[in-house]
Length: 203
Ligand code: MN
Image (tube, rainbow, N blue to C red; front, side, top):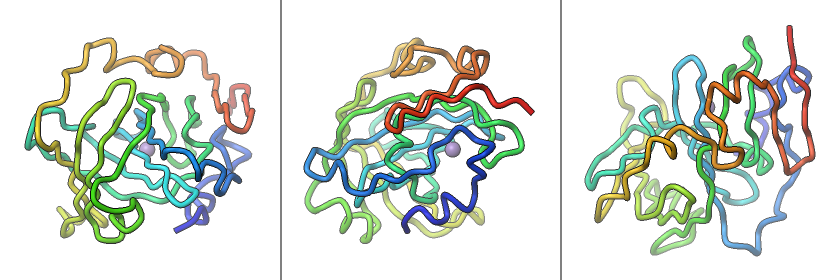
C-alpha cells in the first residue's frame, strides 16, 4: 500500500501528524506494535503493526477484546509511517481524523506459523503482543463486508482471557501518563521519532 493514501488524506501544514519518511530502519529488530486511542468523530483504537517499513493499521471501534473467544470488528485502513508510532496529540478539527490521539500501548509482537507479511496477505494473522498493557495471543481474520464496511476484519482473543486492565491503564497514555482530557487541554503534540514537537495549531 505504501504511504500515498495516508499523505493524500492529510494537509501537513494543518496537522501535527508526521508526513513520514523512514522506510526500513527497524528491519533487523523485533517488530513493534502500537495502539492509539483516538477520539475522532467516534472513539476508536488504532492498532498498528510494523511490517515492510510501514505501520499496517486497523481501526477497532471497541478496542481489544480481553475475554477468551470475544471478537471485535477491526477495519483495515491505510498504511501509516513508522514515525506515527510516537505520535500523541491533537489533530485540529476540520482535518482528516480530527480529534485527540493518545499513545495507549506499545511493545513488540510475534506472528505465529509464518512471516507477518504472508499472514497479512492470507488474511489471517495470529500474533502475540508483548505490550506495556496488553500481553497474550490474538488473531486478526479478514471477513466478508460487515454492514457495508469495506475491508472488515475480526479481532479475536484466543486461548485464554487477557489480564484485566485497571481503570488507570485504560485511561492513561503509555508515553506521557496523560488522560485524553489532559492531552486535549495542553494541545501539545509529541512526535519523538522525527523530533517534531509542534506548537498548538489554532484556527
Ligand atoms: Mn484513527
